[in-house]
Image (tube, rainbow, N blue to C red; front, side):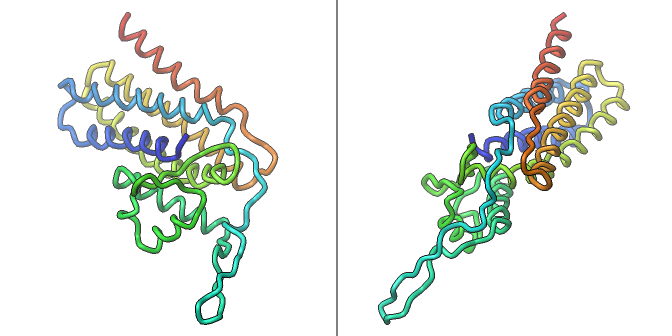
Length: 237
């Protein structure tokens, strides 16, 4: 699993929200289609997170990226290589890559600042295929440590998307649009709220708790799919 996939899912929901906020009327089929896309994408995001639950995995805190080594220079001197980078700086680097991917669709070496690209090349928490940079996730180091910056990035983005869809619900209700569209938008807000709860709890774990993981993550995430199934059943009734 990759952090990029999760954030691209949130990005797609974000895009649907921005388009819905821009529409002038909710009477044509396009808004309903965008609501369906957003709901289906949220189910995909929830399934990806549930596959990784409980998260984040518990690991001994890492304090440096690589052991310090010395490289002999032609002039007889030495140069440090693999110099340790503290954990927070490494998390910030992961977040920067994730932010570029979110803003521009994907993170590539060319789209990163030169100093960021150099640090990415020297850090074992990334994978690079051709010029594209990926942020893998796993239950073991080094990729397990990518959960923490992913969680914080996802939480910020989810809060923004949630604000947009709350505004959309208000507009849809005020417009007197069809009941199905209103129910769909309200359900997306509930789904986003559930995701935010799960991610916020995981964020609290990374900040304050060493030995506890939220084992209700899978249960909460499954409610997102259940809600979608119920709505579709009602529509087909």
